[in-house]
Image (spheres, rainbow, N blue to C red):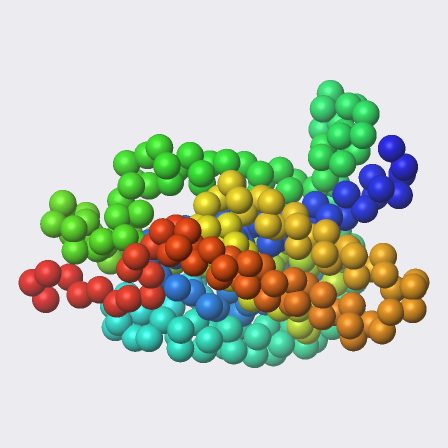
Length: 307
């Protein structure tokens, strides 16, 4: 296969990885019945916090852990407001995005333009990495790609084949019935929202310490909103999230491929978001199927019986 094509496919996976990680988290969050539009803000905070910790300690894995922690804390605020106080989930999510972008800009201002000495680099897996073509494309990636694949598979199995997965789906479909069976819906929703935040933080860290070796304000570049669209496109199924994430990874790569053709850069920068709208339009054409896939109680506040 042409080395250029192999390189394009490699970059597609690299750019699709943070989308996949964040989409997995959002699927779990929405499966429990909570809509979180704060993914962009949580990714931004994860990116800047991972960069700062990695730059300070020289250890990118500590940076990843801190990004996960920051994402979890940010998401817990959304959970508190929407689950405990039953505030409007759309408003809370938008506020979280604005907070995250503002905080990340403030935290990262002293670090703009400073390169990292270390980053999470690509690793060629033994044996598998020697497979012709596939070895270069799939088995010569950074650790976060392998982590994202494992997360996707585990999430699929967890949601469909475990008792706790059934509890999560019950909380999102019919919280009253779930509560009548002894399931604490609020605890389930808290845990799912915080997991989604952890994944958003991890996805942000991927951008700053795996994809690049620097921090710039706005480096998430709307990826959080693409994740919201991908969750719908995937019909809330982790398996379909793989296809959607790498599809959009390819669209990001397409921007760079078309630049030498003289196409205006502003038009190229629009491509991922135009594609998001197209995806939502296509999904909307199959509203019946989409309605069946979406959690029935998504974005609806729930008051526990007896309160």
